[in-house]
Length: 91
Image 1 (tube, rainbow, N blue to C red):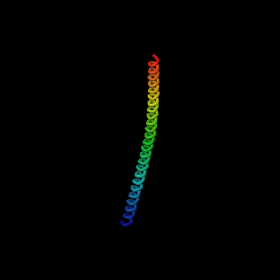
Image 2: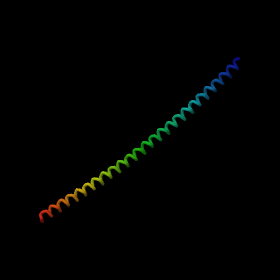
Image 3: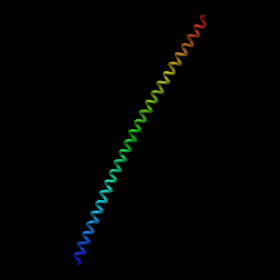
Image 4: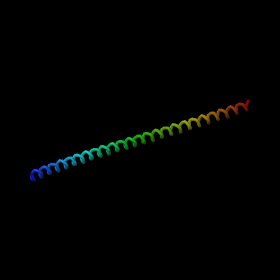
């Protein structure tokens, strides 16, 4: 009976060991997948930040172009007003 108990105890220990190893493998897989998901999320955030920065730069260039266009139009209007003033004095 003593020998049977020892074999039985060894078998229980073996199954406990196997269960622990399976648990550790599962936890490792979960942590690996979590780390991959976090890395993918961080990469997506970085790509989004780059896209937003490019969009912001494009908007700033567009605003600068519009400001330059408005300045040119103001210069044209001033030149036309000056030209009209000179013509009015000549008459």
